[in-house]
Image 1 (tube, rainbow, N blue to C red):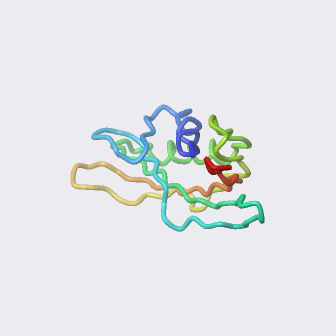
Image 2: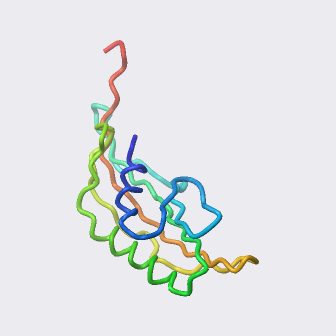
Length: 131
């Protein structure tokens, strides 16, 4: 499923690099799936509606970090479509699960901000090779 890659593309509309699963040495935003996803609905044909949480963690030394993470929140909140490039899902919705907030500061003076979103996706059952 290519959803995390498509979500990264949407989030990259801000001027900070968005990196999947890793955080850079300098200012960057880490995008990663979180535990706690669930199947909201299952159909007889094997298709499912999934609700999947994703975290954006922003690392910065800038005192304006809160503005940047809120800007990202606004971009994501207004998304109406995130199409799959390989047909692995159909986008249904993206909601802010936890509003952006400051996690704290490390010993290297980096501030960390966190934003959690939840994606609602319709996922078709994959056909088996024997079918």
